[in-house]
Amino acid sequence: MRLIGTAARLGIIGILGLLLSVVMNPANWGPGSSGDLTTLEFATAVLDDWAFTLVILGALLTMAMAGAAYLVRDEREINLMWELHGGEEE
Image (cartoon, rainbow, N blue to C red; front, side):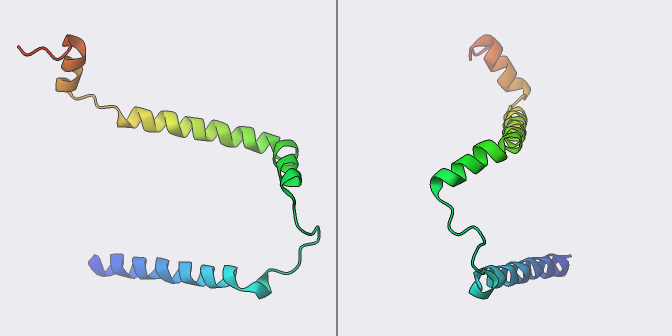
């Protein structure tokens, strides 16, 4: 079992190394058709062209945060009793 885990880790490291070498190669990044994108053009593209996607992404992140907050709640009996009685010792 440890051999499979080690092989999986080495495979992931190898894939990440390959991906990094492809991304870092300047030959793969030719000149863009529209040239450099300014900050104003980027903001306009995000807020106008991608508005629906931005709203959906915000909703997904909100659901994820609510789910994380629910999962973190500690509902052990001793903590629930402390909340009900204010930490009084019996």
